[in-house]
Image (cartoon, rainbow, N blue to C red; front, side, top):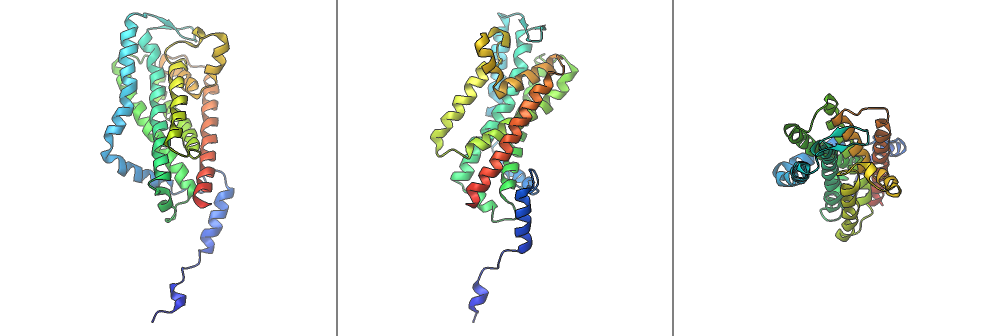
Length: 284
């Protein structure tokens, strides 16, 4: 006969509890050493989800050929904010590269994370393993920026064969796109932790679509009214577009550090905020 004592759950390990408390005090990414396992899970899960990857990459490519090349037949030359005169296709391509990285990162860090959090309850199962809330935040953000980087890499290849790459600085365009993906995936996941239903995703569309159209994507910043320019410059996609355009057109200077600092600050804010919110939602 089994004793009642043997049916009691084992007390939590003092070592693990101490490790958890230390991890909460340390800054990110400390305490998220097993995030790679969640990334591996997402890679395996998306082996048969290649259609979703293709659709996210196709939209910027269609814009490149319809606007960059089609409209480029009417708009022969565009003067960039750096004073360089380029064809319209060469002007638009870097912006669409930044938008491609944004699309991949945002889609995965919002819709997919919300489904896993509220409906699939995946993260509740994750916490039954040695992984913790910080692993969830870092793992999902890492996966979404990888997805955004994949979109950007495919688009960069298309842009190269379309003749839109003219500078060796373009070799840094892919790392820059991954950096853009980090900023958008982190802030996207942070925002997702506040959403209550699918209806709230209308706010995501409300934020993304105007940014895509009015972040100096299709027109130089100088063409906007003066009162609007500061609003454009406050958007994160503008900084991504300006960074990619400078690299692909060879307009490299110290001013690029401003764009890098903006995206870094946004990404770190989103990463820390998402980690704390996930910890609160899953452990409270």
